[in-house]
Structure formats: structure tokens, C-alpha cells
Length: 245
Image (cartoon, rainbow, N blue to C red; front, side):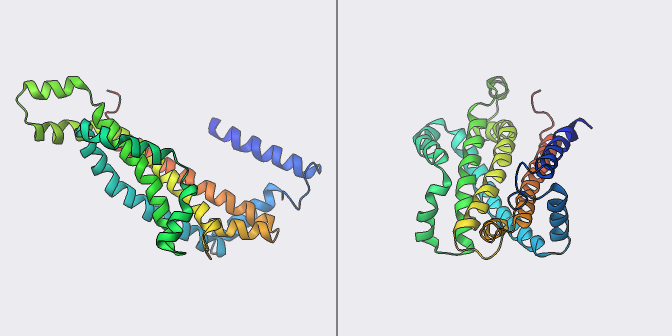
């Protein structure tokens, strides 16, 4: 029951703040009204459609980042000189807020779904490449040396040691990448001519002061991000079960 203490305290404080008028209901609805709006919206209401659209865009961006980023990171990490030659570019663009690149992607892709997916995929890709390459570069030297002593070729070391050593940091990168993709998709839905998605729903609700729907959409986005993070944690524990050994 310990994990539920924080959420319960949050909703209690929220209810007290609204009930005693510390914040006007027009700015912050009661938690009961917000949860009701969330449940009704996800139970076949319009919120469900926007939830599905955002999830699909996030999935597309993440899949591109994973399919391209993991192999690219492993290949770069296996050749330290190759990685060092592009390290500055990876770190530079990884540190650059993806939202600052929205005008550039608008010029290239125009106002379309491809734009939203592309900018999210770009931000997620850099995280995946960095973590995968880092995992290979920092593979345990004892295992590499043991493989060499037993006469393993460079290809065998790459296939049987380095790839497996990179799995744990790669999963860390994938988990961070899916969260980054979701954040960028929602920001893009808010500000790049979208007519669907949670980001579009949040900004439209705010503009017409439909605060119940706005807070319900925010909670839906938070629930999506949390669920994706938990799913990746479960997958990591099952697939990379030897991590830390």
C-alpha cells in the first residue's frame, strides 16, 4: 500500500484546497469532477480518440528511434574512434531542446502528422544512440579479455559479448526515449497545427476555460507516460535479468 500514499495525499490536499476556496473552481475543479471527466472521456468519449492518436504518434516515433538507434549505437560503440568522431554532434543535439527545432521541422515537413512524429523520433533517437554506444564502450573488460584468451574473433566478441553487454544501457535509453517521444509529441500537438491528440485537447480546453477537460487530459497524458515507463521496467527485468551480476 506504500506506493498509494503519495497519490492519496495529493488528492486529499487537492480536495481541501478546492473545498475551502483557496483556489477558485473555475481554475481548479475538484478531484472528483476531474476523475469523473477522465473516466467518461476514456470510456468511449472523445478523450479516448485523442489518447489513441497521441499513443500512436509516440509509438511511431519510438519505433523509428529504436530500430535505427540501437544498431547504430552498437556499431559506433564497437569502434571507439568512430564514436569519438561523432560524439560532439550526438551530445550537442541531445542537449538541444527539441522544441527549439520545431521551426526547422516545420520548414522541412510542413504542418502534418509526419512533422510531429519526425521531431519526436529525432529527439528519442539521440538518447538511444548515446546509451547503446555507451554500453558497448564500457563493456566489462574482463569478459572481452576472456573471449580473446579463448581465441574468439572480433566478430564473435562483437556478437557474443558486446551486444549482450549493451542491452542493459540500451533498455535505459529506450525507456528514456519513449518518455521523451511522448513529451515532444504532446508539445508538437499543442503548437503545430493539430486537430487531434492530447496536446491539442489540452490547449483547446485551456483557451475556452473547460478546466475539467483540461485537467482530465493532463491526467490521461500522465497515465500514458507512467504506464509506458512501467512496461519498459517490466520488460527490462525479464529480458536483461542478469543485469548487475
